[in-house]
Image 1 (cartoon, rainbow, N blue to C red):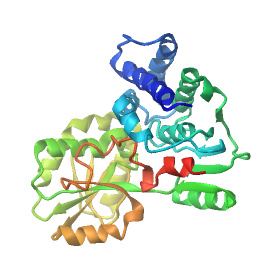
Image 2: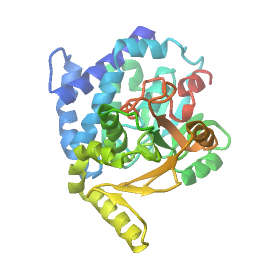
Image 3: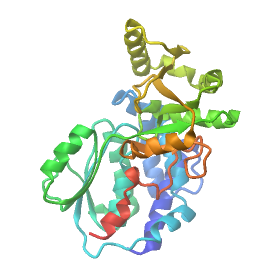
Image 4: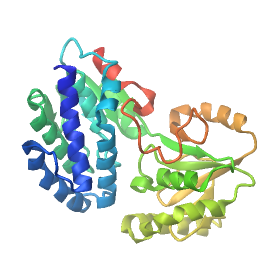
Length: 346
């Protein structure tokens, strides 16, 4: 398939995503319009399958993909790769922690010229099935290259995302084929006290988008000892409505009860528990923090934990800017492993 053909198909998908969020049908072709109503219905109903997939969360995912699938970004991404010399069956075991989290892997398989065998997560089955059907409609060459499979018995290689436990199973079960297997990771933020109100507003998005369930969500803060934590709660206040979400509130209440029973010191505001803890990954409704004195020493410490960290948010140029953790570019690969290069070279 020619590069322009690939790009045009994805431009159409991105345009559909934008229309689903903006309710603007101008410029949509017949195929896009045929999928529009189903997409709109899913935004409102998918929460009945997965309580975490609220309309806001699904629209945030659609909006992020709409911003990603534009011509300059697609051209920049795809120009670095050629199609694989031989089309192979690539199994993709998808996660379902946030909406459409498996879409990037699916696109990598198709764009590199392979056949996609997708094992959908039960937590994100409807949305992913919808988008895969759109892809089949937009590009005839992909119609026979997309297969949703419950069992991946006839694949040549694998891309899988899961927990540390499931990763061990994947390593054993698929030991005879080439593979990328991703484990648990999380993200963190380093603050030095010079952050503006807008920076902290962005941090709130990094913490709370998709209820903090993504590997790119910030679950741990590193603060200077004199950092004013009231500034955090001021920025976080915009997400107070999370206290009305049953699943989130249940997690918050449970964790609060456990910590209080164990007489653990907490800071809290009715919807978030701020707890001093050395661990990187905090549970839902909780944000861990740790104080530091020397940032260079901290960075050395974090290098030793690099296999547990998806991204670091801070004002430093080498890190992710505040508010951008959940807006990765197409070339920002999970775990730093270039999926397109792996697939193109098979």
